[in-house]
Image (tube, rainbow, N blue to C red; front, side, top):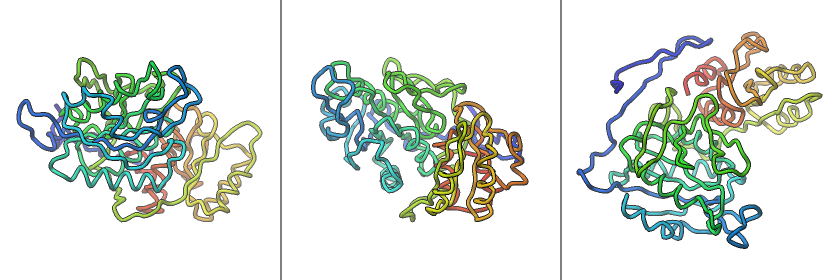
Length: 363
């Protein structure tokens, strides 16, 4: 066990960033043998979807089943937790937006501040689970477990994965082992970190993976088994606070590809983007046709983050571009969609590129 006072130094091109590794005690001690109190917040998605028949696994309608029905479909939940449900909103997750994120985050923080809530499960569509998970990982202000869960098959399918995923997520959210681990994503009996997980397949049940870095653990025999944890600061240890926010700065993603031009980039800047994530080829390379437009955007005050469309590895500072001279930021290991989230939140704190680069090496 790592003492709460232990500080691990992370070397980065921007300097040394100190990251607190906390093995925080349970947020609320429970009597031995008592069940945890877990709140299920429903937001829609395939886990709440319905199909035309029991064999419909493609072409179904997402976000149709309410939270009470989801809970009633898994009567075994009452054996592992005292469960309550709340329908925060009901959407297919491709429709997730900043307003929904802020509403969800504020509700999560309100509930976690209550002494009678030990953990939270959020049911969610799989298309944007990884983005919501990382957003909450940065803005939740509690060490209590927050677990996001979804399904790849609708509730009406004979092979529906939603019920067992929900059951496992409730066990995880009520476990002492999950305290202080950051926001977690739990599907297919696997536990992944909200910062690192990504959807890797359009349809299969094992779609959620953490390439290279690996999953955190498993759900087996009604227990959470952790084998590693993320060293990046999260939840109560971050500097981000959305309690007073009604909106987030606009940040857009420009995708790199052969023969690209600056049309999309210029349109985003004209539309008022405060930041641009450039999802470059390879190590975040900048095409000659686009680089001048990126430089011009930065001169106008737009923050530029170099990320990569590859999906794995570190984007090296001053590697494929002279970031120090251009005053650009690099995304470290964050994929473009997650880099966008961190840049939005960073811009609520500062517009200083050096400070923002430090954030990318910290979170």
